[in-house]
Image 1 (cartoon, helix red, strand yellow):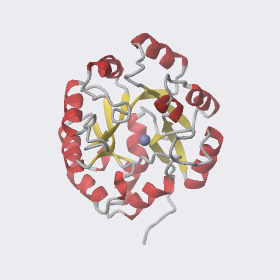
Image 2 (image 1 turned 90 degrees about the vertical axis):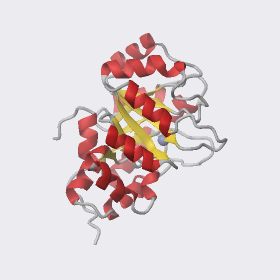
Image 3 (image 1 turned 135 degrees about the vertical axis):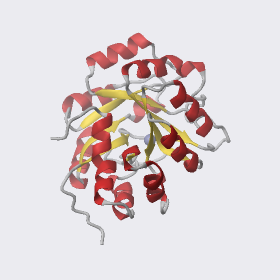
Image 4 (image 1 turned 30 degrees about the vertical axis):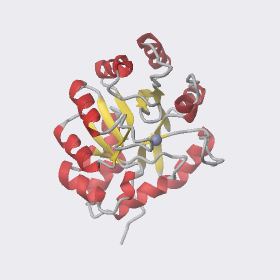
Length: 260
Ligand SMILES: [Zn+2]
């Protein structure tokens, strides 16, 4: 019997905001996302809006406004696109002006640039020095057969930058067994359940191999709903304490936040 009534709220470490090109979902703005979070028992999200990821030249208006309007509900990733770049000074200024920023967001496949390319080096060093989170899209083989963010490249990054906290977005789907190995081998590498959590048995496999403290609730909301991955975790054959780590406690630790 699945217990859907948790006595704590969840934290979703991997979300977006705003419209995206192939999908229509009207409730994509900060106000409607917070309403939807309330419905689904989510206290806090960390978000990288589509306007910063897919628009040429990052806009950063959605996220900075959302973080100011909902400081206890929405934190942000500074989206780094290697094609347009951002200097260390620009990142320093953005983080100083917006205390809600907790890390960087990379989309190497979409930006068609290997994560090991020198154009990422300054951003990675910036995150490493400040012990920030880096949430990167990671995937074994992308649609055009490129491997901009596949397992061996991710291994190199977590090895080279031991002080940043690297969240493997989608847990390197297609190479998830290697992602699990990387999370086991490297203190700073974390597994992210966004989409990949739907595979039957994978949550149990991750928890058995690396421990629930390295596994994170993550959804891609608002493109996908909070409930999708919630169902996968709630139905997984792991303990309630392990579920709480995945849904909440691990994110609090990564965000350097105390529980209330
Ligand atoms: Zn995503």
